[in-house]
Image (cartoon, rainbow, N blue to C red; front, side):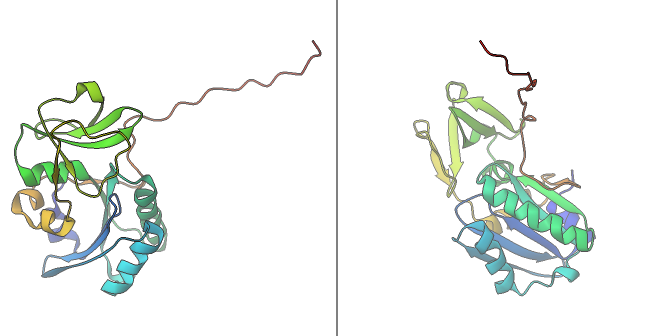
Length: 210
């Protein structure tokens, strides 16, 4: 998995879209120029494109894409992924996905802290340095916990859970985040699934009178 620093060295400029939280954040990043960022609090279908207009992005000049694939707003994540898939039809470019909790965990830099976000139905997304991205029941959460600002939760936060900033521009500017292997290349941008959904199989039957 490449780091942001590596991607920028090889594939600048990079267009990064993060619509996982309540604030849409879009960055145009280039190894040879200062990063430019724009943010909006509108829903992703509007906010993403307002940010692009604000930055004056010329999609044809972008050499790579990145987006947050989890956790957070499924609508926001899939809006970002849909836009990138469309642009890649016009001109295929490398696309990279990252996990928000992993970015925050590397920014905080404390392995004992579990970064969490609500996964609904009594489950929570969790990431800690040295571990993987997982989904656990509320009863499985223990120790010191943090959650990024701007991520919705339907169940009450576990006791003593602290809030931590989710300003993507500031987080990615930290060398320990920019140099960490947090990005994975994907040919099919979409929201991250811990497991593929399973569906019940319906077998058609001829109706018979009782």
